[in-house]
Amino acid sequence: MKKCAFLTLDERGDYVIDDEHLINPLVDLGWLVSTVSWRQTEVPWSTFDAVIIRSTWDYWDDVPGFLVVLEQIDQETQLANSLETARWNLEKTYLADLERKGIGIVPTVWPAGVNPDSFQLFPEQLDSDDMVIKPVIGANGDRAFRVSPADPVQRLEMISNCFSDRHAMVQKFMSSILTEGEFSLFFFEGEFSHAILKTPSDLEFRCQEEHGGNIQSIAPEPLLLERAQQTLDALDETLLYARVDFVRDDNNDFLVMELELIEPSMYLRTHPDAPMRFARAIDRHFRPSDPL
Image 1: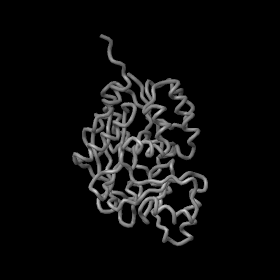
Image 2: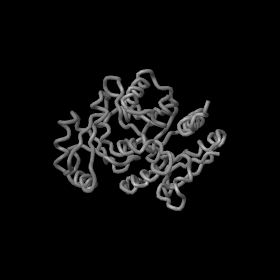
Image 3: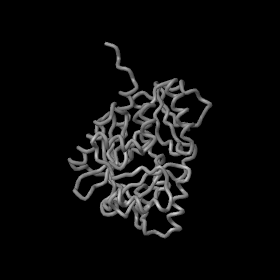
Image 4: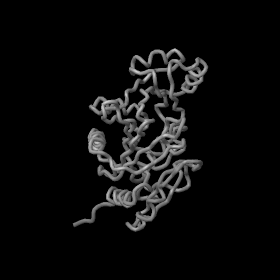
């Protein structure tokens, strides 16, 4: 059997991880699956025929170390998504690259630094007093704040201090997050698999389950699916997996919130066919075609 490793974090904590839904479908396709921490050093990466970045939801605490590990894996075996893609997708500045390619994104500014006075400048740039500030490198809504220049100075100082040691991005707060939610569409080797709608809990704007968000399976409307395909078409390669997050704007169109190509939760449990679709994509991606 071929050997495959899923990279994960050291301690699961409160995270909702559904990678286990992939194991039996992969076994059926002739793969032996191991789930290992990306920080492990006991087993050589060359032991595995393929390594897939999955729930590495602590890499932002040691980005240089994470990249060193990915580089080592890339030298010893097959890695997905690719090392080049991981480097590009680590920083959310990739959104600016997508925008330059004509992809609609949530209005965003990229300040060199943040202080309490900065919040008086962002509204003019974003055409909104209602904003979200979050790290350029990060995930799961950590250190994400909904903020307004009218907030108390003490709060603006607290938020500024959170970004004293890291770069921030500031986005227009999209009101449809509260009235409708955030859409996620999933693709395996460029083919659409399934979609979900995430809605925040009361008194919260973040949609992640860890913050009380509700998840439901949906069939995406044609325009949403079209926007997702346009986003993937703007990339230079067909990826093993991709997740595109969208929010609806005031013109009833859809804007990219994030394009997740490193370690997105794939919400495999929300569609009965999703685990096997992903497993077959993995098998096609890593197993050489039989010689004629």
